[in-house]
Image (cartoon, rainbow, N blue to C red; front, side, top):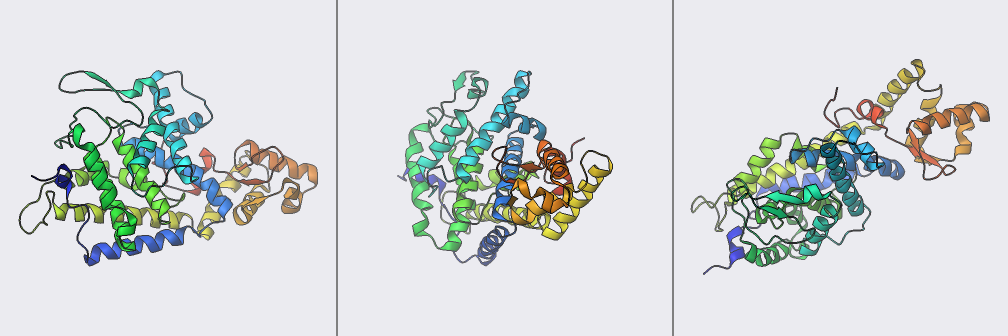
Length: 392
């Protein structure tokens, strides 16, 4: 009799698939190149924005559409009085806080491990309001509580897919760790493993709820750990651009083996390969999208046009652009340099600086520390068009 974990074989597409391996190498190359696009301090500020983007799109995949403005408010604890809207804000804040911990190296190593998955689920779920920690069994109507960081103890169904029995989850997770251990894989295989393991994790469905978010945070973390991912792009944005296709690709990879020419495992080798090509293609597309947005000449042009419009409308003072351009190129500057940069006397230069700080175009850790570029909501669509959907 087969071991339970054999039911999710194969864990990786066969080696030597040129198209797939070429995509893995292209992803690694483009991911590494994007990281050098901006000054490290500007990358830090942009990373704060992209975490919100990642959160927005990851929640959108789950059917939770939280406006970016509400996400921004949640981060400063400006919560809605409407319970439903407030819960979505807290859910978004939870996602961003967990990703920030991952980005800052405060999470356990991914190395695909059960420890990391439990950590993500615990940190995310423990930040949720109580209303979001209960699910209903569609067959019995029974209310089940989601315990942060706890492997499920009951059976579930995900559409037509019946995940492993709760009593068998440990061997499935052990096989998951063994199959994707980086030391057993070439560099190209490790990149492909990020894609393959994304599906296999959702197939195992180890938690009562929150599996999709855990899988996307896990993929983000492994891309980051492999130095392909960064704070400058979001795989969730790519997956959410066509939610139906993402879910259909996941479902297709759930399919059993389709005959003697479809590998030797229990599940379809062809559909796993197709999912990996799809996932890597989404990653490449998102890196290319951000690389185009962050082309420095085009970025500066968009910023200048927007700021000059704001100056003409008297919403910002003259010479605002000179301070923002300086922050973009040098990362940060001391407040005392505002007069030198603008060409104004000290008092007038301080007024320009204060206006930009008040509106979030420049940010700093304290009232006296150096300032760096900020990305306020009203500027995002102008400086980084199409990062979010277009809102009225």
